[in-house]
Image 1: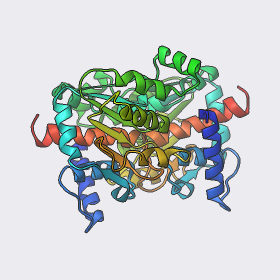
Image 2: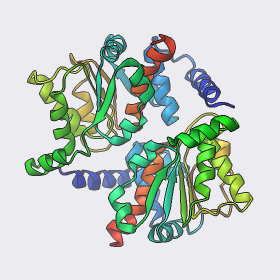
Image 3: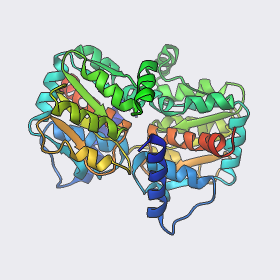
Length: 207
Length: 207
């Protein structure tokens, strides 16, 4: 079986096992791709979407968005050929020595400093946070002070301390979001959500 | 809370929630780090270990092992400072243009060709497969033909097609293994298992 046939068959199995649990077009692709990445059907219940978020995210991606991740692992998992086709880009500032130095001096996490620096970038900004709840908390503060207006926040850090609360900050708020409620998530989930958005544009809408 | 305190507290929560489910020293660190990475307690049941695998893996890592991954995402997740301290290394051949060309010519996956090329490398070899069941299947064939003798196979691809069967090939076999039985796994899980082994050596045994 060729890789694309395996992916097709996998999505058929996921759709079948979801049974009566169906989702709107656009959201369905995100939910199924996250399940494809984790083999964990909990995500059918965990993922929360703000109204119209899929259309808003796709518009940002078609307008030269910059996707900011909080791990190099998430950055590695995002489809680079898809980004190039759309004229979008992705970056992660976590390994930047200046970020590390500033974080140490201020006694905050590198994720906090990364978000602050990324917030000053031009163009539509998509934040994909799969690891650090502190990144989400700082983003929420910056949004509250009108210092950044993200086109989308993908908030899917995984963990046991401060994670659930950090994610709940965005639920029902004005910033477009895709959030994995509860403890689960991860860099792989963040990348899968980005790819689910990219593939909708590239494969289905022919960009 | 500082990152190291958050990690400590997270492991305390995991240990508490595992309750009466305890594991031998060495294996416990692997199981808990995978749960830490996924927030998924299924891994307390899914992970299978060959006899003495932790000691064998640690010996390989202290003897200049090369860790071969089947995704750049897994490679990104492995602790580079820990590898450097031990004199071990990690690589992924998946993005190598020669690998892609050969795979296309032969009509096989890049993962298959990656494993074949990596099998010819010197020194103790640790294969960390978080994505491609075809990588595991080809590795199993190469082992059967005495073309490679891995120090460890971490077999944790995630997925719905051929994945369960590929992982079961190793259970009970002679090659040292850490396998996530069933559908679950991923690049993040592969990296977490490698890091759990590295941190035992660095943090607890003072390498």
